[in-house]
Image (tube, rainbow, N blue to C red; front, side):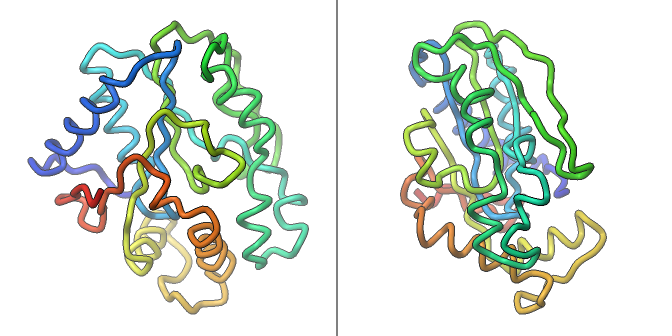
Length: 223
């Protein structure tokens, strides 16, 4: 995982983003999505933004779409290297909406779970239900958050724009394995699956803001 940096530029951007989210109206909750391809820096930025919002006195539930994977048999039903299967079948969107997004929707009750499945062990991992107080911010990081089935779910969202070669190198460093070669057979499922997502869902257009996160010390708003 990319390590967060304490650079002045990054701190300034985080404060700007936190102020933006802090000013959003509650109904009775706020739903924030941090989207980008694998290796874009989503979880790191989401963790930093969570800390910045809590420093402002806000209650935040930080979760990841990674806690809502389908079992491997469903994810790989089209074959373990299939890009379309990666995009369309990775996540249990019904459980994601029922257990996490729905409770934080306008008029929602706030009784939620932050995960239901562990993809590493390929087994259920049902988090204890928790009650969110009115005014709580739900902050979710993960891939494919602007896919058509999730349109209208976010009060505010980010798309992290990073060169694909950079994200692959980060994934290799994070995982300690794999290849940073865009054309490697082992990367086809992920690279082409996320290309399909970007082409079909246009997250860079649907997000509230687009952040260039190529240089972790010098991120900046593109839009």
